[in-house]
Image (cartoon, rainbow, N blue to C red; front, side, top):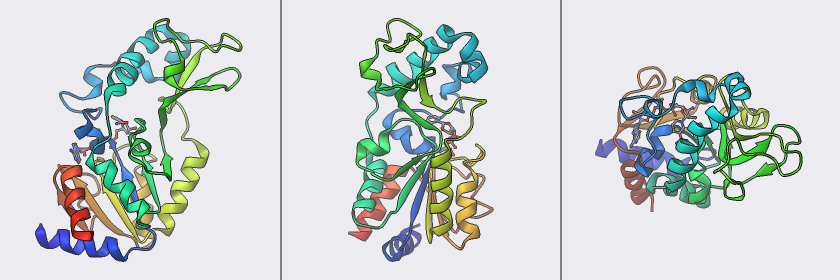
Length: 245
Ligand code: NAD
């Protein structure tokens, strides 16, 4: 492991177009569990509440679950060392972009500037009628579903529901960054959610070195990973950051 960390630090230092691809695991140390597993978000929320058709038919019911998870619970979370190291890498010119599957806004809060949000962002609400955007703090979530001040139509969190497409710009820019990348850091993701899961594979196909950080093996480990660093995202990334500085 020590030797791998040293080698990975060298690869990162010499990279020209590195990207990071992150999943729910990078936010676990911020107190946000992944969807799956015994303490996962699915144990708190019925997945149907995040289905677009169900949301349209039962907005109040969906919003009750959405509020309790994504605003009452996520709202307390703060970025951790892993988010911060990625923001530092970008500031030092070592990282071109973060492609994230997460919707928690923690990369931006840690200081990352170029973040492609594959699944949108919970910290934005949008009117389904006129498209007006809101931040959650401007909206009264005591009365559900929340409504637009302009036309009194329902607001939806601006993250991707089941049955919705990937935001077009984020998809295109993520693919472009993956195809240009010489290194991809794959952090805290099982690689099971499509089409997001194709981003590291696309980078590998174009010659990128794949460095994976995860507490457990993922779909990538045996197939495309060049360096598997097993452990918590913040601990491993902070060690690499120290070796680089
Ligand atoms: P996942 O739930 O499928 O997998 C999480 C991965 O993180 C696992 O491989 C696990 O081994 C790893 N992990 C757990 N703790 C870790 C740690 N401390 N350090 C490093 N790795 C750790 O997550 P996914 O692959 O991202 O897919 C689930 C989908 O759920 C995503 O599309 C995402 O949009 C969404 N989601 C987002 C959030 C969030 O915004 N924080 C939270 C839950 C789910």
